[in-house]
Length: 514
Image 1 (cartoon, rainbow, N blue to C red):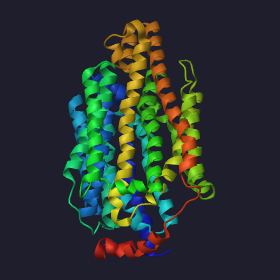
Image 2: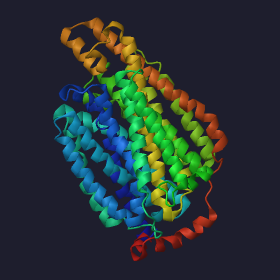
Image 3: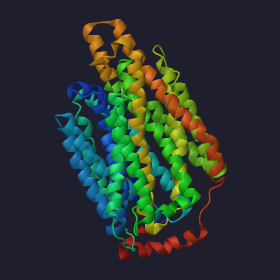
Image 4: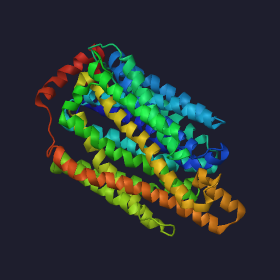
């Protein structure tokens, strides 16, 4: 090991810190949802938008962000995004209405949309060796994933001791530290092949995602017979189809559809999406279950997600050791099996279920994510070209965030639909708005039977949502065994060119890589 090698790993630490911040903000709001429902008078639709506006911006802006980083310099844009992330966090902190919070969350998502693909795009530059790059990818993913369950814990403690706006203040010191580390340690890099921006493609991708997401959320809020909801959903799907057609015909498309000709990239990205889908639905639901059904406070809700952190760490560590022996196909199949079992057990949760049972299936879900997500993303990353690292990694991340956005919208709709159906005669305002509103009404009137009915209806919706996730993972198991490589493979010709490509990425600045 030499100084340059040490610098590479320190740079990875800086990127991991930045990703931890993004991961925290994806879920730090989950424990605040019951508080926001009361303080900002937010119904289920607004609560979905608090979560979805962030992930929607992530998915919509990530592709152009990757292209801009390739063109103008990844380090420059990464530093700018960190500053914007800090400013948007302050705006969230002092929001006084649901609309203000949603708007600030959109800006926060835009900043995160730049941070995620560009930090990932630096990895092939920092680590040309496939073995080191696989380790670096595992660290990068784990840092983001750790932020997901840590967010509710930190957020819960802050809510219990301060006010809900304080959950966003934890981003500020993280951003300051991350910016200083990135500025000092991360080398500049860009794609020497300058391409015009695909402005029509950018507009179509944003409008398509917005239409699909809004459609699902409105259908969940107004019911499946709502015409505007169906119009938005079908319109979004139509725009997405036009986007794909445009990408095939554009001279300089936003998405390099040629990447999907590679089986590794195509299937690695697909299984990344599948694993992500259930995870976001879980984070939208479980904290509400802890608070509305188990009756714990915000901090207690976050602490009860610790089994997920344990599972994630164990799964990630175990996967790091098993992957060279088992290969990607068996590893992803194993991960999907664990996820299916965990969420299937979650679907068996009832009103009187003890917490230890919940801890088991939450922990299994974390273990499945730790086992599978790094492997699936590494399969896709190994097929990326260094010069197109920004666009390629942005595409993987955009698909992952799109899956998260649609998961919150679609699974939230499943939960809301079943919840209202099982309310029966109690399906009236404000009880029908959310389980938090229903619990508040029951407690204010002291009616134990209403409280039991509301909680039981919510568990019914949560169980239906978890069964959907479990079924998706179970169906994907044999597919993973069939389409993913049995053994890790690296492209020999690309490996030989990578060290030389480092010097060509951005001239003298890239010599800092070593």
